[in-house]
Length: 510
Figure 1: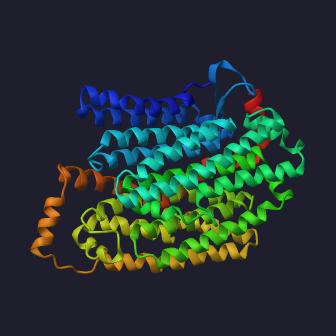
Figure 2 (figure 1 turned 45 degrees about the horizontal axis):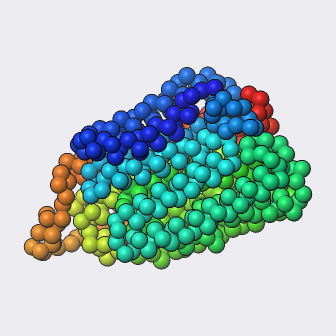
C-alpha cells in the first residue's frame, strides 16, 4: 500500500477546510497557505513518479491503498495505474498554474473562492483515484456543487441564472449516475469496480442495457455531448476566467477519465458492442463535435465561442476513443493532454485581455491586441494550436486523431477533424483581426480604465497573470516540438485501458 495516493485527496481537502481558520488568524497568510497546499500536492505527484519510474518504463506500475485496512471487495480501495497517473499529473499541473493565476485576480471573497477551488482539486483527484463506484458518485456530486458555486461567484443575475441551469443539468446527471450505482449493487452486491467488471457479464442483457444507458446519459450530460450540450457555453461566459479554465481545462478531462474507466474497465467495451451502443455513441460524439464548431462560428462572444469550441473538441476526443483501437486511444489521450493546456491557457489569456473591456462581445474585443501586445501574441499561439498549426502541440494531437479515424476507415470522423480545423481558422481569425484593429480612446475611456484597475493590479495582472499565460504557451510550443515525450506514458496508459484482466487482478489480489 502507498499512502501518498490517499494524501493526493487529503492535502487539497485539508487545505480547503483550513483556509477559513487561517483567515481568522491572519488573512494575509492565506495566499502563502494556498501556495503551500498546491506545492505539497505537486511534491506528492513528483515523488510518486520518481520512486516508481522503473515500473512505469516496464509497464507494471500500480499503486493502491485500502481505507481502514479493509481489503476489496469489502472495503474502499484507492488505485493508481498508468492511466490514472497520467490524468493525475496533468490535472495537478493545470491546477497549480491556475492557483498562481488566481492570486490577486479574484479580489472580493478570495477566501471563499480558494475553499471551493481546493474542494474541486480534492474531488478531481478522488474521482481519478477511487476504485469504488459509489465514491465516484460522491466525488462527481462534490464537483457539481463546488463548480456550480464558482460559476455563480460574481453574484450577478446572469451568473446566478447560469449557475442554476448548470446545477439542474448536473444534479440530474448525478441522480442518474446514483440510480445506476444502486442497480449494480442490488444485482451484484458489490461496488468495487474490479469486482463489478468480473461479474457484469453475468447480468441479463436487459439489465446490462439499462445500466449502460443510465451511465451513458449521465456522463454525456457531464461532458456536454449532443443532445446535452446547450447548458455549457453560458456557464463559461458568466464565470470568472480562473473558473472557466478549471471547467474546460480540468473538469471536462476528469469526466472523460470517468467515461473511459466505466465503459472499458467496469462495464467493458464488449458489452457496448453487444448492445450496439458503441456505434450510437460514436455518431452522437461526431455530431456534437460538428455542432460545437458550427455554433462557435456563429458566436459573437469570445468566452462562449471558446465554450462551443470545447464541445467540438470533447466530441472529437470521445469519438476517436470509441474506435477502440490503439491508434484511437493514442490520439484521444494525446489530445486530452493538448486540449487541457490549450483551453486553460486560452481562458487565462482571456481573463487578462478582457479585464478592461466593457463586455465579452466581439465588438468590444477591438484593439486589445494593441494594448496588450505580448499577451495577445501568446493568445494567438494558443489559438493556432487549437486550429492544429504545426509545430504546436495541437497539431501533433490532431494529426494522430486524424490518422486514427483514417486507419479505422471512419471517413466522417476524419472529415470532422478537418472541418473543425478549417472552421476554427475562420472564427479565431475574426478575433485576431479585431484585436489588432486600432481604437481611439477618449478621455472618459482612459479615466474608466485607470479607475477600474483593482489594488495591486500592476503587480498581479501585469506580472503573475501574464507569466501564467506565457507558461501555458511555452508548454504548447515546447511539447509541440517534443511531443514524443508523451509516447511512453501514453503507451502504458493504453495498456492499462485495454488489459482489463490485469486491472481486476491487481485491485482484487494485488
